[in-house]
Image (cartoon, rainbow over all chains, first blue to last red; front, side):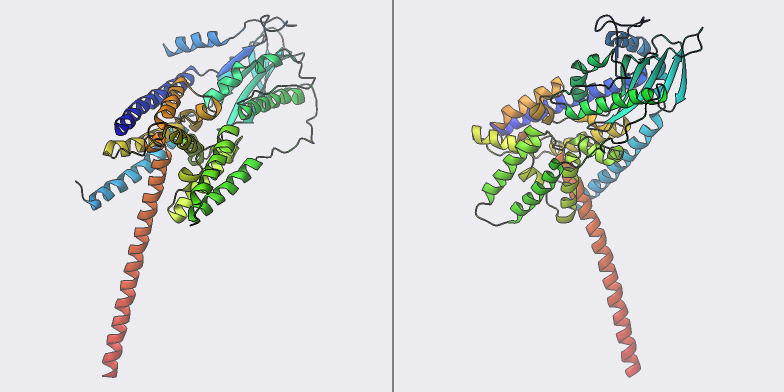
Length: 72
Length: 408
């Protein structure tokens, strides 16, 4: 019974770890091909009043779409 | 099934292949790395259109029809769990912080995410760097927060000094990396050795005391137990450029040294915080010991650790490939996969004693690797010694025969 449980734990854990590692590789690969910063935050009207005109606000979503375009 | 000699031969091949693969991953990683930082900085301009580097850590942005700069981009770095975190800060010509970007980080992504999801970065946007910067911390990810805040301050300083003519503070305190936790690691490791050597009738009680202390100090308090990422940091040499926390590296180095010297691993039995947690759960559920002895179950963790270390070396980011449930267990930080893994390990620990230690823990492959190579090296030395002794014995016999002949 215990051996069976340990066997099940082994197999499921191995699968989880493999998926986790594959996700990490995929994420780092995407970052590298995208050649973009990990995170960008810009001063805009959304967070604080700006004394300077802002040409464009770059946010995380924008970078995500850029990633997709570049990887395509 | 196979003779011991044949198994030994294949183990030697596997050992050599492992070392070769690690070297190959490290070499391929060095080819892959290119200086793409200036490309990234180019994307951080807000009002400017032309980017010019005016200092190794400072860029200025000018618009096409104006000669005077409209903004500056300063670069800075801070030391996190796994190594250096690089940050770029875009500052207006009046000194207001307009944009902050994390260019690269060698920290575990979950820790960095926790810092980024807090409003730490938002708070400093719009601040004027001519006035001192005040940045708050984030609980649960202190080292990552410190790395990020140090990097932001350094990036702002490069603009402040080079552009606005401020002078750097000379009386800054040197960063002290050797902390009480590091001393505690050395002290507790020494105690673990003593407890393992003693034949006192209360040996088991002493062992429990160390195990529980380690679980509290290196587990729940500081979450500084070592993992596959620490092994990657050690072999990649990332610690040369500085680390935010040396405790896990000190523990790992002591464990490796002790295995090399005495062929014994005291960490798993007396110090491992996750091992202690599993032991406590086993007591609760009255769990029994069982193990899997199949060839696959022995070699899969070895392959897994080798793959993880190779990936860490190739991407130059060992902290990203940590696959243990320690982060979730002691800091509630990690991916959803690791959360599921932790829950599974906790539930199984109630029925089977130390399920993680008996399956995927990277400590077993590392110990096996060191022990096997130690034994191999020892056998080579023994063979050489035996050869030398035979040669000396032959020489002695020759001398004796010659002296007999002379006396005759």
